[in-house]
Amino acid sequence: MKVLVVDDDAVSRLFLKNLLKKFNSDVVVAENGAQALKMLDGVDIIILDLIMPVMDGVTFMKVLKELLKEKRPPVIAVTTDDDKKEEAREVGVDAIFIKPIPIPQLLSTIEELTHSKGV
Image (cartoon, rainbow, N blue to C red; front, top):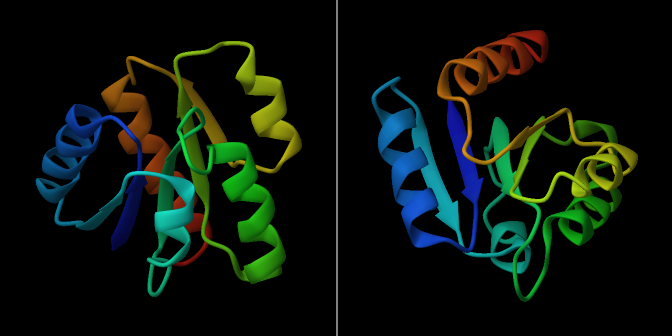
């Protein structure tokens, strides 16, 4: 399974990359939404920070939906701002977590979303 982690925080990217590799995932990372749009090939699921410079998560979702339509991979949004949850739901994220991310719930959500898409 190929996971794209999109987060402007280097520590968060490294933590998620190392965590997911332990579960046999191929992990690619991007610092912002603009960079992530260039890395979508073969991605099975995206973990997306909502608050980033250059292109934030909400804008990324709007562009992703336009580019890939119904073929887009599932997206799990993460944020430190509880007020962003509603906006994230409106742009179509499949799940959302407030940082710090609850790891057991994240892993079970990844499992659930990728199996429902046949990954």
